[in-house]
Amino acid sequence: MITKNIPNFITLLNLLAGSIAVIFAVQNHLIAAALFVGLGIFFDFFDGMIARLLDVKSELGLQLDSLADMVTSGLVPGIVMFQLLRTTLANPGTAAKDWTGSSFFEFDFPWIATIGLLVTLASAYRLANFNIDERQDTSFVGLPTPANAILILSLPIILQFQPTAFATSLILNEWFLIGLTLFSCYILNAEIPLFALKFKNWSFKENFVRYGFLVLSVILLVCFHFLALPMIIIAYLLMSIIFKSKKKGS
Image 1 (spheres, rainbow, N blue to C red):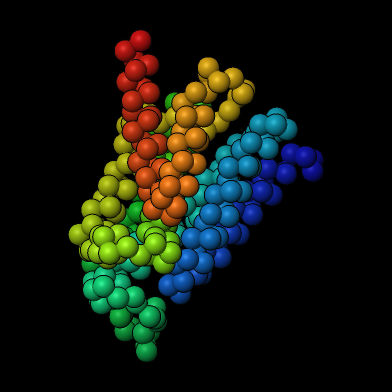
Image 2: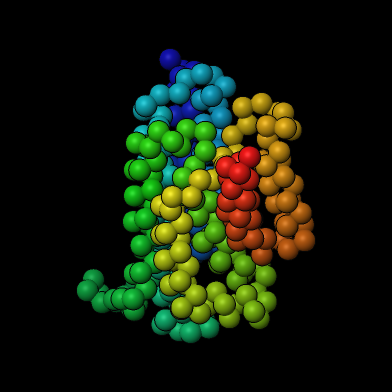
C-alpha cells in the first residue's frame, strides 16, 4: 500500500510547490515563483519515473498528475504572463510594484493584461485532452505544459539575471508578450507530434534524439546561460518536427 502511493506523494509535492509559486506570482515575486515552478517540474518528472520503476501506474495517479500540473505548469505561467503584461502596459519599461488596490473594487491593472490568463485556459484544455488521448502514451501531441511553463517563466529570469538591452526591450514589449501568449495557446494544443524524454532503455540507437537534445541543451546552457531556456524549448520543437518528418520519409 505504501509503495503504491509513493508516486502520488511525489505528485502532491509538485502541487505543493505549484501552490507556493501561485502565492509568489500573485505578489509579483516572479523569480521566487519560477524557482518553485522548477521544483514542481522536478517532482513531475520523477513521479512518473518512480511509478514506472515500481510498476504502480494507476488512473488515480494520472488524474492527480494532471491536477498538479494544472497549478504548477498552467495557473502559474498564466499569472506570470498577466504580471508581465500588466507591468508593460501600466508602466512601459519599468517593473510593477504592487498587486493590490486600496479597495476591493479598485483594479490597478489594464484589463488587456488578462490576455495572459489565456495560457491557463489553454493549459487546462491541453491537460484534459491529454488524459483522454491514447496517442500520447510514449510521445506528445502539442507542447507539454511543463515545457511551456519553462518558456514563459524564462522571461522574468532573463530580465533579472541577463538584462541585455535587446532582451529587455523585447520582453517588455506588449506586442511580443501578446504574440507569445497566443503562440503558447496554439502550440500547447497543436496537432504536432513531439518526442518524450522517457527512456525505456539506455540504447543510443533507440534514444539518439533524446541524447542529442540533452547534449544540445547542456551546450546552450553553458554558452548562453538563462537566455538558453527559451532556445531549448524552440530546439525541442524543431528537433521533434525534423525527427518525425524523417521518420515518415523512411
